[in-house]
Image (cartoon, rainbow, N blue to C red; front, side, top):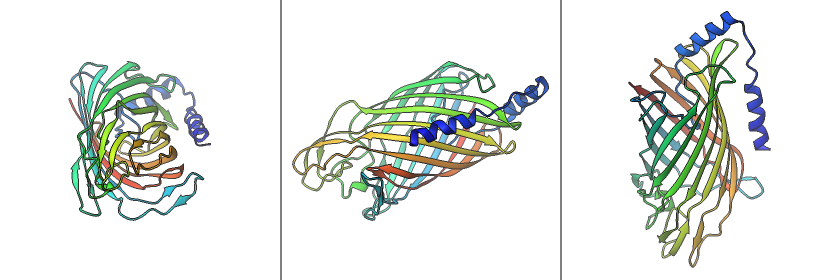
Length: 316
């Protein structure tokens, strides 16, 4: 059902109507002058030119709001899982179509010992296969990304599982993203569709309380979860500065497999995620976006609500 919702939203985005030559020229000029920060969840394409440095710091407050059981019913969760997280997307254009991206971050638990530490470090290479600057619904660009997540975050020997900010294992990541620029009622619009796959490259030793839900005294191994996210996003410009943004995504995950005496029972899960947001773009190269990510439906998954804000900047 959730996948059908995503496909339905995609069909609505195809409602861009044909225009006369004069209107098309005016629309193209409006798109060129429009500032767009980017929606909250959709991955960005490779930078638009060689030598461009894109910086986007994010600030997130992950607030527990229960969890979905195997029947899809939301249940209350024990207090103590709230976290403040921050990360920055740092992307540099190696060529006009090839970019290197790093996402350093840190997190702080808002309960227990209020532990603070760095998160695992994703590193990616992105390549744009086609679509550099073309305008029109039928002129999309395609960017794929391949990378790893370096395990530098705490994950074991914790005071509380909420103090864990990493997986402990190397993770592989693949992304594919398409985007296009067009107008709706002569308002600039950017649509994106993407798939993101994350999978472990190996198991990791686990001792004591950990990110994997193990208890004090535990000793064993864990193979982190594999996850897939498919989504669609749209940004609709109200004027040159104010933009409405919306992400809709379906996430599916295969549970982490933990081995050892007293290991938690694995439960694969899924959730449907919505992230509405509002942007204000000061110029074409700097903008702010604020919104909230939440899951109205799911199975064996968190129902956390995550308000967040980000600042997007380009340096030429």
